[in-house]
Image (cartoon, rainbow, N blue to C red; front, side):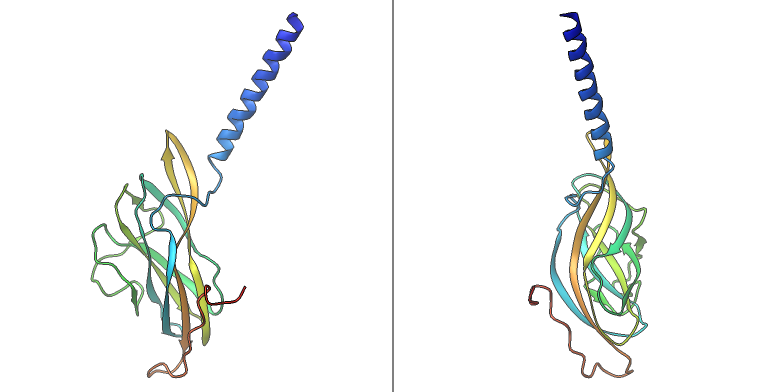
Length: 192
């Protein structure tokens, strides 16, 4: 009987240890379901000049609790486009749809670096992404991936959220106008 009790205690201790190790490991995994705000949707089509950075208002972050942004990446970029930078506008600022410069000139509000920024709970902070066409032709970006940290019941979690708008661009090299610049179809228009 004592041997059975000992086996049960060892088994229970092993299960508890595995659960604790699993919980600790799970808190460090990147998750897609973070609560950063409005999520993903909508789209914008922009004609741009090759080599000239532009600003795109990607999303409004409105987290349920305070978060710290660790990294931002373009989601599924296609074509001649590169990531120039990312920043956040102060809470309550007038938003940016798109602007022909990065950082944006309008509105005349100072853009703070997004990486390392702490976003307060329910802040309503807009994230602005800088894109640059590297060659003539069409490109697309399906929003952004934001890696961030937040506290949940005293545990710091590392999360990842796919947010923003789909951007379809057409890059030209001509100095005047945008002749023959046909934007590609948005993903919901494409056949899969």
